[in-house]
Length: 125
Length: 422
Image: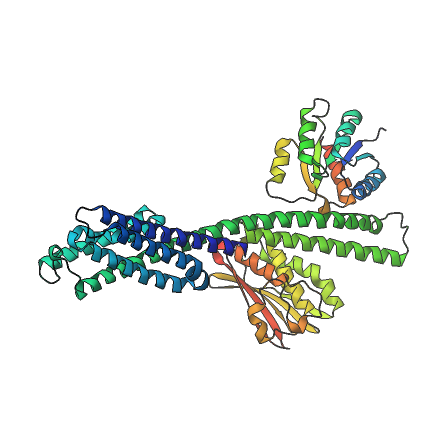
């Protein structure tokens, strides 16, 4: 059976490693990008089933990356979830307005919880 | 500090321009008198007088302005104004009532910097005094303007009006400064608040990133299904995990405080039974109480307590903080939680038999980060009671306590009955 591909875009290598470890254990094929530009490239080439995108990345705002993903015909149908530690009023609404599927706070989402969430999201896809 | 400096500069600037305009008008009046037909002044006298005024201005700014306080300067300026005005009146004595009005010009002109409305007000009052002078003159009470002479009575009258107008101008200026100060302060506070909020968001983010990593990896260890860890390693990873989780909670608390303090952070209220909230807190804190060998008890009320329209997450947080503190500061004995309906309020109390609060600390208990001297050795942040107070007050309630040192403390809070849904 073909594994579902999950892309995580975050400039913290440790975060990528942490979530990848658990998601791989749970049977997903996790691909990671440590920058928004490489993330956009991977999204276009690999066509993942789900993307997790950080907001505050070096030299790049995740919301801008989200806009690009949603405006590109090759990637606009891929569900994107924001996975960040920024908790600011209005940011959730802004992300959802651009086209994010959901908004998660990393500090509240341990690898186990994220893996469960991925399963639920892919079920309802 | 920078803000105070800018306000002081603003005040000095206004004072500076007021004086400049006053003196400039005085010199213009003097020149005007010189240009009148049959003027009693010759050119050398005009130059002498203008020189005298300019000389005084220089002395004022080089010496008086630097070495005297603002109040002293204003007194010196008042006296000099009166002397100069009196000289102008003497010089214009042959020209009747029209020149009598001239001395109001400097005062009215000085108020121009205060705005046209205030300037008009002062000019109007000054005019009323002139009318009064004409009236008194026509009645023979004062020497008439037509036979203008520098009687002692008229000089006194002029000085009185001058001081009054001056006082009024200063008062209006002070009020204007106070208003500007208040507006500037409000603007500065708004900006500061926004900056603080942004700072808190960024601080939270910077803290949360490493915490997320520690929490995530420790949870991977702690929940490792293949049990690669021995007993000790498992315990350690569990401690790391639980404490990081706690730390995440603390950062979230600080964020909550920041939100509650900086904006009208309205709670989402929904119907919830307060008993369930207390039960949850009891369940969460029972292991802690057991560990400390403290009796933790919830005295359930005999009467039915109606469900309340509350934010159950926040209220649970408030009760948790109070009960957690009670257990923490009780070396032995008990912590009893009770709830009752009293008149128009529902009152929750958390009673302990602990260390109590020193009377000198009573006023500081609800201050953020405050920790009593007798409990300083205990672990804690000093935020628990403060957050509880914020939450209770956000619900329209009130919180207070009674305490006897070394006997125990009872924290109580009330929620208004209109929060209840029957």
